[in-house]
Length: 242
Image (tube, rainbow, N blue to C red; front, top):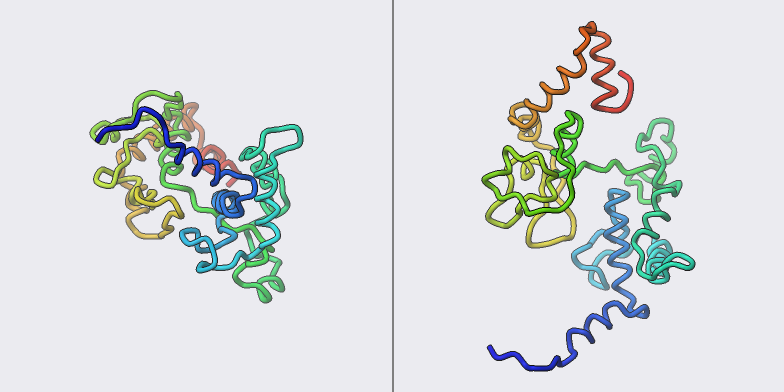
């Protein structure tokens, strides 16, 4: 196909239109994705159909305010700053609430679906985070940034972060697939399942066996008793006392 010597400018015009500060949809879609990743539930449930045909936002004023903040950016900073939104959401009272409904029975009775954000929505760990956390607890995770992707035939013995695994529709890592790995053909929202295969993967995967043995040797290096070993294991793995 012959390509013209000069650009028609159509792609640049499209990009300028999508990112124009007056465009109403782009920042709202971005905010909806970011809110889901932090809070466990989007402000607009139909992430794949954001508009008049989809669901209405649960908190339209919040969606509009965050979208305006994204476009404007921090005072004296750059517009379209995602870091600015992270710094608005993460320190907020809504983000820092407890996820347990204990002691909040009146709120649970009035709003059982937590539509009004009276408690924190529990957030599942993504498949890549599950694998990386297993290696990190054992001190086996290779955290070096950059470099070539890890091909499928080398992923079983690789200790690199799961971010660098080759990921396609016909070649997906079996361990990550069990924990609801992201679909290749869309980027809306991951499935969240609780199935027996996940417990089996954490019981029988060679990756987990190697990491568990490494952690056990470290925790029992000075010959501590069972009670002390359990206490150390809770702190090392769950970051809390038994």
